[in-house]
Image 1: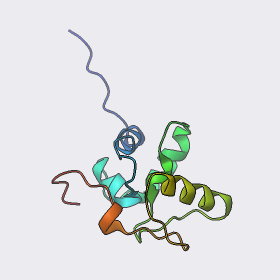
Image 2: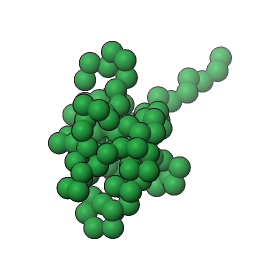
Image 3: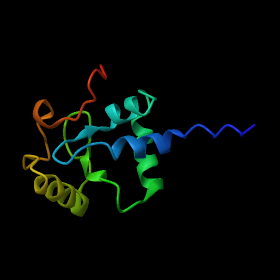
Length: 110
């Protein structure tokens, strides 16, 4: 009998979920945590993304629950530029209209 493969970790589920967010859409830390299976782990999303460290990860599509970029300085400017390059409208203060640009899975109900 074949051994059962281990369940993916929360961090692995976060990375897999983030890779599903299409160009031109954003996801909040909280929604990403919820879709990855732990709705109360928004802060752990940051740790998961940092530990992944992959250049192929669309990290710039993750914003805070208020619909804004959380980074400051050069990170803010880079995230804003990357989002705008995908067609996301980002205000000068880093806010994004979640009603227009938030990614949702059909029926996710979060």
